[in-house]
Length: 128
Image (cartoon, rainbow, N blue to C red):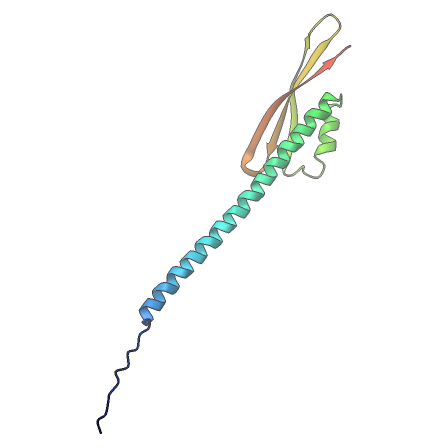
Protein backbone atom coordinates (compact mmCIF):
# COMPACT_ATOMS: atom_id res chain seq x y z
CA UNK A 1 0.00 0.00 0.00
CA UNK A 2 1.14 3.38 -0.74
CA UNK A 3 0.75 6.24 1.53
CA UNK A 4 -0.39 9.51 0.24
CA UNK A 5 0.90 12.52 2.01
CA UNK A 6 -1.23 15.51 2.05
CA UNK A 7 0.35 18.86 2.19
CA UNK A 8 -1.50 21.11 4.55
CA UNK A 9 -1.50 24.68 3.42
CA UNK A 10 -2.05 27.09 6.29
CA UNK A 11 -2.96 30.56 5.26
CA UNK A 12 -3.57 33.45 7.60
CA UNK A 13 -2.29 36.77 8.82
CA UNK A 14 0.98 37.24 10.58
CA UNK A 15 1.21 39.02 13.88
CA UNK A 16 2.84 42.05 12.23
CA UNK A 17 -0.03 42.40 9.75
CA UNK A 18 -2.60 42.23 12.54
CA UNK A 19 -0.74 44.86 14.60
CA UNK A 20 -0.45 47.23 11.63
CA UNK A 21 -4.15 46.84 10.78
CA UNK A 22 -5.08 47.41 14.43
CA UNK A 23 -2.91 50.53 14.58
CA UNK A 24 -4.55 51.97 11.47
CA UNK A 25 -7.98 51.23 12.93
CA UNK A 26 -7.10 52.96 16.23
CA UNK A 27 -5.79 56.03 14.39
CA UNK A 28 -9.02 56.24 12.38
CA UNK A 29 -11.20 55.96 15.48
CA UNK A 30 -9.14 58.62 17.28
CA UNK A 31 -9.44 60.98 14.31
CA UNK A 32 -13.22 60.49 14.18
CA UNK A 33 -13.54 61.13 17.93
CA UNK A 34 -11.43 64.29 17.66
CA UNK A 35 -13.56 65.54 14.78
CA UNK A 36 -16.75 64.86 16.73
CA UNK A 37 -15.48 66.77 19.77
CA UNK A 38 -14.47 69.73 17.58
CA UNK A 39 -17.87 69.76 15.92
CA UNK A 40 -19.64 69.77 19.31
CA UNK A 41 -17.50 72.67 20.55
CA UNK A 42 -18.14 74.65 17.35
CA UNK A 43 -21.87 74.00 17.60
CA UNK A 44 -21.93 75.34 21.17
CA UNK A 45 -20.04 78.44 20.09
CA UNK A 46 -22.43 79.02 17.19
CA UNK A 47 -25.41 78.63 19.51
CA UNK A 48 -24.00 81.33 21.84
CA UNK A 49 -23.44 83.70 18.93
CA UNK A 50 -26.97 83.11 17.63
CA UNK A 51 -28.35 83.79 21.11
CA UNK A 52 -26.34 87.02 21.32
CA UNK A 53 -27.65 88.23 17.96
CA UNK A 54 -31.18 87.35 19.05
CA UNK A 55 -30.77 89.42 22.22
CA UNK A 56 -29.47 92.36 20.20
CA UNK A 57 -32.38 92.11 17.77
CA UNK A 58 -34.85 92.01 20.66
CA UNK A 59 -33.15 95.09 22.13
CA UNK A 60 -33.73 96.88 18.84
CA UNK A 61 -37.39 95.99 18.82
CA UNK A 62 -37.86 97.11 22.41
CA UNK A 63 -36.10 100.40 21.62
CA UNK A 64 -38.45 100.98 18.68
CA UNK A 65 -41.39 100.39 21.03
CA UNK A 66 -40.18 103.28 23.17
CA UNK A 67 -38.39 101.62 26.08
CA UNK A 68 -35.30 103.25 27.54
CA UNK A 69 -31.87 101.63 27.21
CA UNK A 70 -31.72 101.01 30.98
CA UNK A 71 -35.01 99.11 30.97
CA UNK A 72 -33.98 97.13 27.89
CA UNK A 73 -30.67 96.08 29.46
CA UNK A 74 -32.35 95.08 32.73
CA UNK A 75 -35.02 93.06 30.93
CA UNK A 76 -32.82 91.22 28.44
CA UNK A 77 -29.62 90.44 30.34
CA UNK A 78 -30.40 89.57 33.97
CA UNK A 79 -29.20 85.97 33.63
CA UNK A 80 -26.47 86.55 31.02
CA UNK A 81 -24.71 89.48 32.70
CA UNK A 82 -21.45 87.56 33.09
CA UNK A 83 -21.37 86.34 29.47
CA UNK A 84 -22.40 89.43 27.52
CA UNK A 85 -23.02 93.13 27.93
CA UNK A 86 -25.38 95.37 26.03
CA UNK A 87 -24.35 99.03 25.70
CA UNK A 88 -26.22 101.95 24.20
CA UNK A 89 -24.17 104.93 23.03
CA UNK A 90 -24.14 107.95 20.69
CA UNK A 91 -27.81 108.85 20.99
CA UNK A 92 -28.85 111.55 18.52
CA UNK A 93 -32.05 113.23 17.38
CA UNK A 94 -32.56 114.43 13.82
CA UNK A 95 -35.45 116.63 12.68
CA UNK A 96 -37.24 115.01 9.77
CA UNK A 97 -40.02 117.48 9.23
CA UNK A 98 -41.87 120.20 11.05
CA UNK A 99 -43.48 117.98 13.70
CA UNK A 100 -41.47 114.77 13.54
CA UNK A 101 -37.96 113.77 14.46
CA UNK A 102 -35.90 110.59 14.35
CA UNK A 103 -33.97 109.27 17.34
CA UNK A 104 -30.96 107.06 16.65
CA UNK A 105 -28.69 105.16 19.01
CA UNK A 106 -25.94 102.59 18.63
CA UNK A 107 -26.48 99.24 20.32
CA UNK A 108 -23.21 97.43 21.04
CA UNK A 109 -23.26 93.81 22.14
CA UNK A 110 -20.04 92.47 23.67
CA UNK A 111 -19.65 88.71 24.25
CA UNK A 112 -17.05 87.72 26.81
CA UNK A 113 -16.28 84.52 24.88
CA UNK A 114 -13.71 85.43 22.28
CA UNK A 115 -14.25 89.16 22.87
CA UNK A 116 -16.77 89.38 20.05
CA UNK A 117 -18.59 92.65 19.47
CA UNK A 118 -21.44 93.56 17.19
CA UNK A 119 -22.78 97.08 16.66
CA UNK A 120 -26.11 98.03 15.13
CA UNK A 121 -27.74 101.44 14.80
CA UNK A 122 -31.33 101.65 16.00
CA UNK A 123 -33.82 104.31 14.97
CA UNK A 124 -37.29 105.27 16.07
CA UNK A 125 -39.58 108.12 15.05
CA UNK A 126 -40.84 110.59 17.60
CA UNK A 127 -43.56 113.21 17.33
CA UNK A 128 -42.70 115.51 20.20
